[in-house]
Amino acid sequence: MSALFEALLERNSYISFNSINDKTVNGLIGKKIGMTSIYDNNGKNVAVTIIEAGPCVVTQVRTEETDGYSALQLAFGDRKAKNTPKALMGHFKKAGVEEPLHKVQEFRNSSLSKNLGDEVTVSDVFAEGDKVVVTGTSKGKGFQGVVRRHGFGGVMQQTHGQHNRLRAPGSLGNSSFAAKVMKGMRMAGHMGAAQVKVRKLQIIKVFPDQNIILIKGAIPGHKGAYVTIEK
Image (cartoon, rainbow, N blue to C red; front, side, top):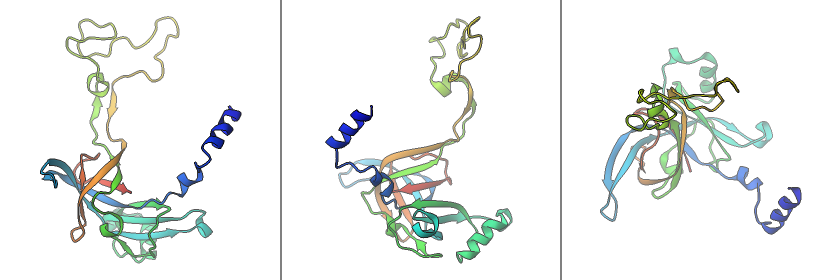
């Protein structure tokens, strides 16, 4: 395997694995407002998600000398002081932020040059036509059965051996050997409320004055959910 790997490296010597970590990442923290549809330049009706992106406040600047890596820590969203830990309140105070903020996120290798307390706005990061990656928490669905959770056949499409229980999971394992339910068996359980990342989404419209961006398609989360938008 090592000889094959070395041969591939020689053949593709232009590939730099360090460049993956050195890639600059610019992004913002946003809040999902909802969905609507607009007409593009070609007159086509396009479904878009409305996101309030920033302005975010720089609460910490990490450097290679002090932290071993470079990053900008941004914060966004309203938060009550009584529900904020004192350690976090002190962190915000050190950055010159008077009111506590809800979500804190680091963006490594950011190409933006900012200081503590500076604001990062939509116009600093995004432009119309940019491809972005959106990360959020999907809607929680609670405890769901195998038909909804895993797409089992259900009514008139019974599987796994059952014949009179139309939405049941059916047989789960062996009898005498190994006499247990194997790991990875698709069963009923908690569904949703998981981190989801959607790539290659396009920014259709940017409203810098209102800190609003319109992204083509759907993104994870409910209305009012916080998301991370990276370029």
